[in-house]
Length: 427
Ligand code: PLP
Image (cartoon, rainbow, N blue to C red; front, side, top):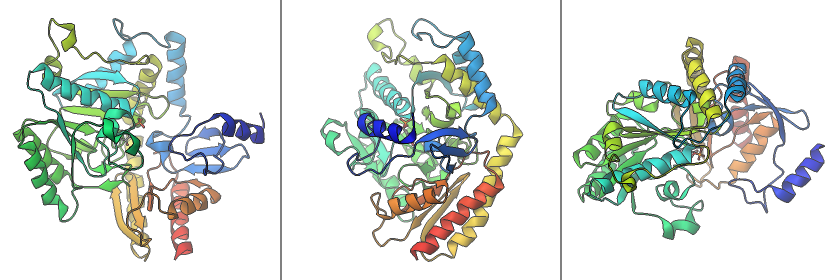
């Protein structure tokens, strides 16, 4: 099918995510991806600066991941996961738990980041229900994004994304994002809510809030918050859907913390971005609260693709890549290169709130409108970058890079130069 026909059919039949279909421009029609490069139907190439929604951590079409997929397909593509299991899921659960804090021992499989969060919420609420101490509140951080299913939306920042559904949400208290003077205030807010004894769990994106604009906060605050939750017997959920897999410079963001969560949600880079897969990992203590002769006390939750053998195989292969020192050399190198680039950014009058955490570099463009997701600068920047062969999707007036780890020096330098050129252009 030629490009024009493809786009015509796309317009006729495809409903794109997060998109106002009436006003949206023509989508990119990507026909090929290799390492960091996406190629469109016209043969134009783009550097995938945000790893395609932060998932393709090793780059696209990694041959090692491809081999793992092919081998698994030849062996076992898929099998029901209730009443059956398979070697790739067992291997993955064993490996993941060996990488996490010792008390996190039970792995529940689902499909993506939202369902990993949904399962964590169900586990948290049912844990208290099964213990005959029902608790109905959750504490989340202002600006949070945990996905688009109903539970995940409930605990996310209220706004246009979830406005039509607000009447269906459960009780959530949002505390201030822990930055500057709000740092200690947010802990006071948390303690006041926790004192009610009604809080089933607290949930955070540890150290970096992704969709809020890669907003960063420190591990000391997070440790203090977790200690408070412990004091008042609330469970602690770390949503590491975005922050895991080396993004923050360590395998998991919680590796920077002294405190440990009771539940952790994983997805995105888990499979190197090749197939969807979500994991919710729980402590034995939570798991034990579901053990009972009555079926109704069990976690009666599952998805058709739960424990997908193909997804587990590619996740295991991705973990192999994380065992290679070269992956960590690249992560370190990207952070260093960003650090060097920050010096140039700092000198720019349009730039504020620069942040760096591992391979994630972010900054805000001073537009005079404050932090605004719908800032007009967003589309202007996006189109400018596309023109220059870079796929960088701003989050409002926040520009950020979190590239695949296989990015070359030349490509990363190009991204940095293009960002600076854009800033010069709008100055
Ligand atoms: N949690 C976090 C921290 C995320 O960043 C996202 C997606 O961006 C999600 C959950 C939802 O993941 P998914 O889009 O795979 O459902």
